[in-house]
Image (cartoon, rainbow, N blue to C red; front, side, top):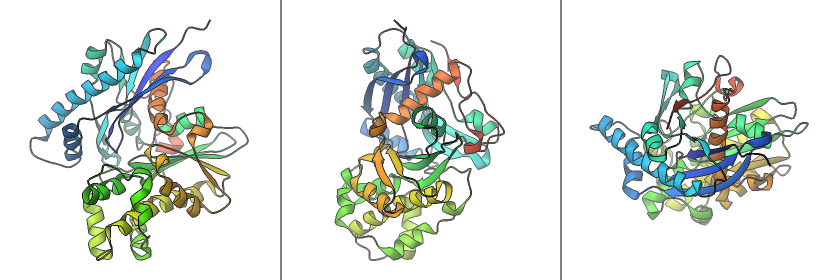
Amino acid sequence: MTTPTLYIGLMSGTSMDGVDGVLADFSAGAIRTVEAAFMPFPGDLRVELMALQAPGPNEIEREALAANRLAACYAACVAKLQGAAAGPVRAVAVHGQTIRHRPELGYTRQTNNPALLAELCGIDVIADFRSRDIAAGGQGAPLVPAFHQAQFGMPGRTRVVVNIGGIANISVLHGDGRVGGFDTGPGNVLMDAWIGRHQGQEYDAGGAWAARGAVHGGLLAALRREPYFALPAPKSTGRDLFHAEWLDAMLDAHGRGIVPADVQATLTALTAHTVADAIAASAGQVEAVYVCGGGAYNGTLLRELAAALGGGTTVESTAVLGVAPNRVEALAFAWLGYRFSERLTGNLPAVTGAKGPRILGALYPA
């Protein structure tokens, strides 16, 4: 019987709703999900993490304290997963919570306290996956295309995987082994902000509110003129660009008098069209697009994406490829942790723009 090679991957993304965790087995060259867990953030921690997205008073201390609380949430998620482990867990691979992403200035910041997490869990912790790629001249993001290729790639067939979290990114998995990918722009981040303001909800469940509105063509056209969308790859983005103030400025200039449900419908269409534009520009016509992340559960968004791609492309969840949409990113970081431990590279220079392949991560021994 093969001894399991177990790693835990933890991901808390741009939507900042909580921690997705996966216990994964990499024995015999496979990538197998053993167990998954979700740990929601306490409401006040989510508020503080949101506030730390922008400069504020005493932010160094506030970030440090938030990182300590974040480590406690990570540790609770690890404890949930350890019960399913049929052997020792070799390491916990944790992304941390992005609060700044400025690769053009040479840095990215993922709030975390991996030393505390190692102390709480008694397991080696691997963290800080993005900064090595940035040090090599890359964007530090997206990092998931390499994993998407390992998990979903198929020789002789081009596949596109779309991750729609707070920010959306695509991975173009060419049948000849080439991989492309980049952040396309907002995923759920603007939709979440808008429904939070007007409905008091954290997200638009199933896209139900957007479905009650109508897309405003003039506003959509104005939003799509954001210069980021026309930039060539490699490129990455985050809340540093796409935030409530950006949306308010656009609405002041182009959206006065539009009812809130129509704005939500238009923001949903913005995500769909910018993803579809990116796919058309980098992959051409493809048979199928596979969606992961929270956006995979938004039926209105998926219908908009299918319409924007045209009738020849089916849009499906990554569940049809064997991985539930809410597990893909945590599984990707478990894979990156495994790669680090084996001293294997984790980035794709063709995606991030780095000078070459690099081993990603930093070790905090238990």
